[in-house]
Image 1: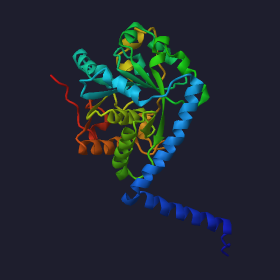
Image 2: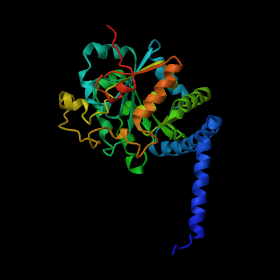
Image 3: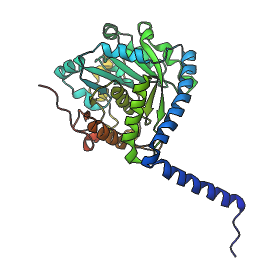
Image 4: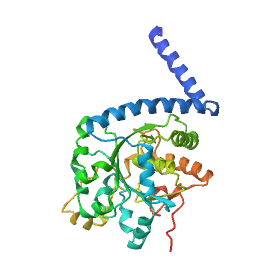
Length: 318
């Protein structure tokens, strides 16, 4: 004997069916404007959260004039280099680093340990809140970079701001993030470009389009800044080895014996969509297609990177 379905079960099934239908409609080209409005609404909410956390951490919020001031230090730069911590970064030659120094460069997270000083550090609070204190060294003082600090997700990480060396405090700024609304791979590129255009026209810099990865946010930031060529260095993703694993001298010169990995498994955790809308390779592939269609280029420096199946390999100038 088949037991009758309860009204609660029928109601739940009906609600789920309606939600699936609405989501299907939302993903159509006709509703691309609605997706942008939803993203803007969440960005407005995140903007309020950023300001609240900034007041607690004692940091200013990233503003458009801040970005303009950062970019004005390299007025002739035509290429933006995003520096990841993958092992392939240890293979970059001194001559190649000399060239990067003439262009615009953003070092991501634990790039703070690398001897090459970028124009900007994009830092995400680490459980070791005092880690960022490693920037208190002479080579950093000479370059005087800026720090774009992602709004921490927990109060426990607020202390990272206190560890920022005093000479960098006035150049450290907080920003927030909002994931893209779409869950359809084919919409990633166009929706990302639309969001970037929206940020640029509004001259808003305190919120970045996100996909749950620092690399994704920095690609968007470089696009907002107007760079047509963006190069990923040390973004390997095919291993959890870091540049200090291939070049232990990097840590030894800082008096550090070892850095525990924040990754597990054979591949970088951003290849999983478990905690983000899309795996990072899909996001990068779709954004690259849109940038290329707009006359831009997103390239990867290492032929060993897992992104080479999606991105052209960057050729260093002679």
